Amino acid sequence: MLTSETFIRVRYGETDRMGYVYYGVYALYYEVGRVEAFRKLGFSYKELEERGILMPVLNFSIDYKKPALYDELICVKTFVKAYTEGPRFPFDYECYNEKNELLNTGRVVLAVLNKESGKPCRLPSWFTDELKKHFNP
Image (cartoon, rainbow, N blue to C red):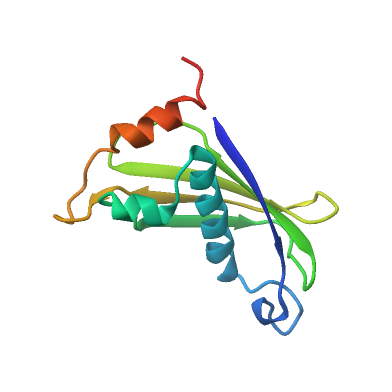
């Protein structure tokens, strides 16, 4: 399993009138976690796109447990729980506050598209070779 942890300090503009992180901001937090997980594999989102792969979001789901608050340092844990080569690539998430309290869990499923054709495709071997290193044989 590939795991990555990213820390984000909640900014004032990300909160609502109650001082809670606005619910839609978590999509951005999850994306930050996803980008850092790719870096852990050895490449960036930008490099994926330069090498002909686009990965738009197909599905986003979240289960809120507790609000994050202004100026808290939160930890976004990102997981790739299953090895895949197909045209769908799922990420799972958990967010924690500074007290290590679970704030939410979520899942984002990305499509894997060929940049030129815009059609679904398999992940390229240069990507899956790095991904395989995080899973037991």
